[in-house]
Amino acid sequence: MTADETSESSTWSREQDKAFENALAIHPEGTENRWEKIAVEVTGKTLEDVKSHYDILVEDISGIEAGLVPVPCYVSSPEGSVEHVGEGGASRKDENSQGNSNHKGKASRLDQERRKGIAWTEEEHRLFLLGLEKYGKGDWRSISRNYVVTRTPTQVASHAQKYFIRLSNSMNKDRRRSSIHDITSVGDAENISTTSRGPITGQTNGHFTAGPRAVL
DNA sequence: GTAGCCTAGATATCTCCTAT
DNA sequence: ATAGGAGATATCTAGGCTAC
Image 1 (spheres, protein in one colour):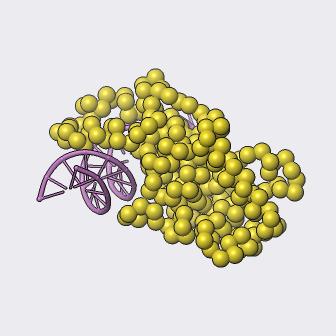
Image 2 (cartoon, chains in turn orange, red, purple; image 1 turned 90 degrees about the vertical axis):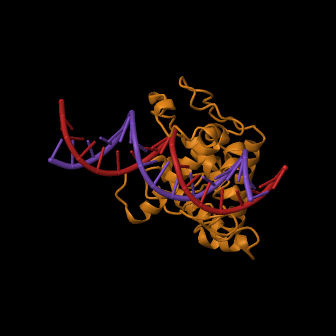
Image 3 (cartoon, helix red, strand yellow; image 1 turned 30 degrees about the horizontal axis):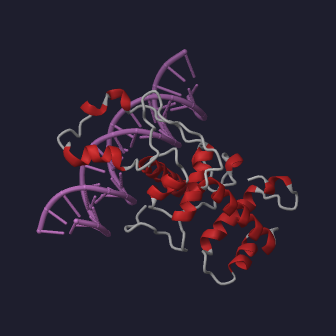
């Protein structure tokens, strides 16, 4: 994303961005007069503005999908926690749920294996939001494969879990520490500590659910 | 400086869906 | 009908931040 930051006419404030994201979710593809409705929601922006903003977003996604946009690559930390890239999700799960039901144990857990983990970067989180917007809630595999390629589906799901918890909590509590989950739209990166409401909630088609059993 | 609280990532387990 | 795969949810643990 660069275009909208350079040209003044297309400068988007955080609030506008959030309103835009909100509107996108509220008026999914297929909605009649979608862009007009979205433009109404985003104060200070015209129909053309929101359209071009969306185009930029789409271009961004295309670039990411085409591998043109470099993403941080944490292939294997010292402990080898993030190797992913591929069908990650199943990997560990297979080992656990498949045969080793005997050790729910931490024994094999290499005590230290659990620790830390690599913190999500804003970039990853934004990719996550993009993927969430495109594939919707539940399709962690696709999001992992096409957007947050540095994370396994399991990691994405875990991140999503916390994200949505944070989201629902933040509705009621203003008194929260800032966190990466405060970035609720792809253009919200610099606004981490502000009270952001206008989250991408995984509504791809106007419905909240994407997975077979929508909970959360 | 210390204690307590909050956040976030990882992991374990359960449930449901789909393929064979 | 069964097995395997995938997502959802609960819980644990570590680190960071805030208040005292």
